[in-house]
Length: 143
Image (cartoon, rainbow, N blue to C red; front, top):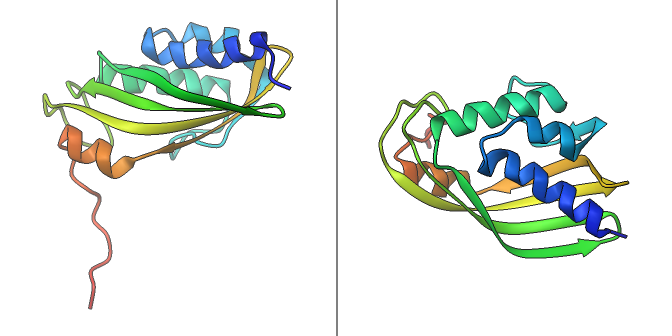
């Protein structure tokens, strides 16, 4: 069952991004934290998550995730909301576009003893790229 302390840990992890403060990751996650949504090329642990906070908030210095809905089930907390920001840095190999956008995200947290122990996310990458003006990666062509 998700407690108020658990919920606060998940919110602290989201605040690491909202407040551009990677140190909040250490307060929010368990030492054995596993991130199922880590960007390609980064291992799924605490240090990679802190690094990603820096990467994302450098590219989108006004990044903000706003929770619109929360649901709990057992030891899981699911948040649905909207992320937004202005691309003034490099993201996904694309340089700054100066465009501001907003896109939906879902974050799933497994919680225990007031800490996040696992994280998954579903981010609408197409909406993110279209809103911020980031080109789609090249893919196979139809024949």
